[in-house]
Amino acid sequence: MTDAPRRTVYLDHGASSWPKPPGVVEAVASAIAEYGANPGRGAYAMGLAASRLIFEARRDAAMLLGVRDSADLAFLSGCTEGCNLMLKGVLRPGDRVVVSSVEHNAITRPLHVLEQRGVRVDVVEADERGVVDAGRMEEAVDAAPTRAVVCQHASNVTGAIQPVADLADIAHSAGALMLVDGAQAAGHLPVDLGSLGADAWSASGHKGLLGPQGVGLLYLRPGLDVEELSQGGTGGSNSEEPGQPTARPERYEAGTPNTPGIAGLGAAVRYVSSHADELRSEERRLARRLHEGLLAIDGVRVLGPEPGEPRVPIVSAVTLGVAPDRVAFELDRRYGVAVRAGLHCSPATHRTLGTLETGALRFGVGFGDTDADIDLVLGALAEILA
Amino acid sequence: MSLREARPFVVYGFATTHAALAAESLLKDLGIAVVPVPAPKSIGSLCGIALRVEPEEAPRAEQLLSNAGMEPTARVEMDDL
Image (cartoon, rainbow over all chains, first blue to last red; front, side, top):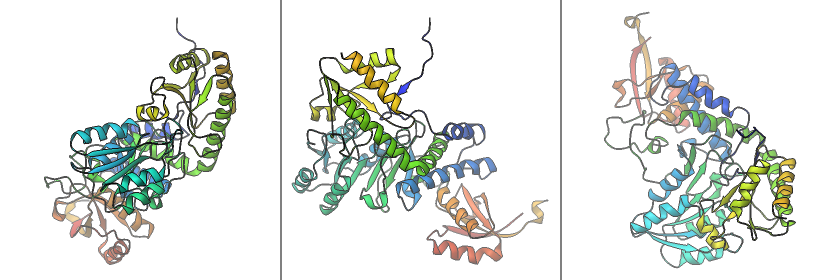
């Protein structure tokens, strides 16, 4: 016997957005069916079409993110690769880095490797809501010569928005770089990389930008020399040279790119660009409705900022006396609700919040969610936790 | 048409495919007839896309690219169809 098909109430946008907006699936399929040639290599019509597809996706993503020269945006496999690149491409043995205590494993694990190679990693505790305090970061930065300050733009556990522009000022005043994990900000927040102050900013294509999985973006500010992670064919220039070309974006894009994924991301960022205000307003409203509804259920404690305080549309909760994984399983099995329990690849955040042992139940609100979805989840939780 | 009937063009090479396509977009927007072509060996070690323009449009194209900070990395005059 198989389970009958049913509608999924999807609240895991913090991991991956679903469904995708109009045009994204079609763009991915079209790139495979119609533009299957390698981009950036042959000058025949299909190869050029693939090259232009990538050029236009990069141009439109740059426009959405406030990047003046789109060559400063590299297409990578995802935010994790971007985080690895900006950290490993900059930090050397003997360098010191100051990092918040609420980072995702995409930051903490590369830093762990770098620490083993002789980079000094100093962690600054965020507050009980998971918000990074600029004053504490400044004290840590000023305590010793610092090569880089590393911080998320927004939390994938609490939804807290971090004071990245202030941290960039602190970093730059100390002669340090500001490196930002933008995974949970991209798409959900207005981002102007031309003025934010980040020297490097990495993002996923498949979360708030509403693109497919397998593609992400890394912004590097003009003139910043970051060593590439991979060397290989780039198609365009200096093929006879033994070393990787230094011109952007090809320096960071060795090998055949994920053209279908980039095509989908291009369609997605065009959709987000033209619907940004309504998308953000709606997901913020729904997240607040969920947040306030959770607070009204006995035995639920919501992590992170209070209702009305700035946050991206992620709300995590601890269910007192019932393990979050059991609640997530019941929500899925009995109500068709997709949410994620556990540590959300961010044990550092849960350690800071005191939820390392239990984990939490995370609701990621996003494109396609409705009031009825939120009400269904709240009703289901009230039943499960009664 | 045979390659033996070729006539002169100016071909520009760029550091990256991205730069070549950015230049193509700029020149097209400003009314220059530009054609992407396989980068010829004669403009260096490039293996990607180059841009071909009519000789009489080359001075204006070069001025426009220079104004935009998008100067080509190589320039060659060659016969083509």
